[in-house]
Length: 242
Image 1 (spheres, helix red, strand yellow):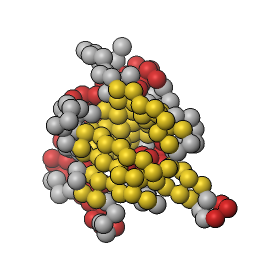
Image 2 (tube, rainbow, N blue to C red; image 1 turned 135 degrees about the horizontal axis):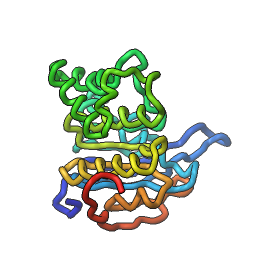
Image 3 (cartoon, rainbow, N blue to C red; image 1 turned 120 degrees about the vertical axis):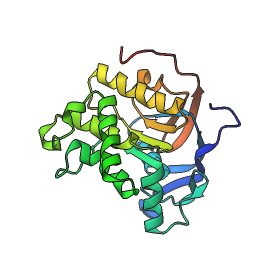
Image 4 (cartoon, helix red, strand yellow; image 1 turned 45 degrees about the vertical axis):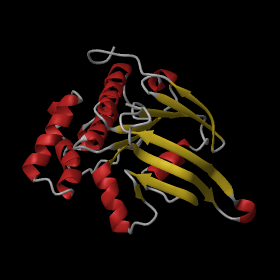
């Protein structure tokens, strides 16, 4: 699915990010060109401070680049109004944050269903999608629990369910297995892998080489620059986590 005929779901053209000015100027990300195509699972690795999280934020329109442009499904993000940008993010991009970002006043199912309802999906259909996502992650029994009633690992799985609910074409994940035990982490990676095999594109930041092995391609960052790249096919796995 990662051949030349596959559509570029995410494209970064000369994208860089600079913080501060003059003597205080810091290049969080030097200008880079990068594509993630339909069906492709891309892992981003590098030491702390290498620009991984900056890259992820720019890719999803959470931050604006100092140079270059970001296109999601062919739409340039820099020309959009704040409302238009929010609409693209909500409809096309699923995020998995390290900090979960669940709304404390909503249950697990409601946290997952809310973005879908904002997309115009009926409340009944959105809840059905939310319950399916929770079941797929093995936490269907948490549907009516609030975040404060869950462990960190359970909250992370709810956040992953929120990112994957519906038909988002681009999934951006920042250390998605950081709060999970190894078995659950493997199950989550298999789920991300399966979404890509079904035609979505995913970009995952990780420090773990065994997690990166699930990806089709690995990009290595250092000091805000791409310094290496490895292309491989993720090994075939059957069943849940191993």
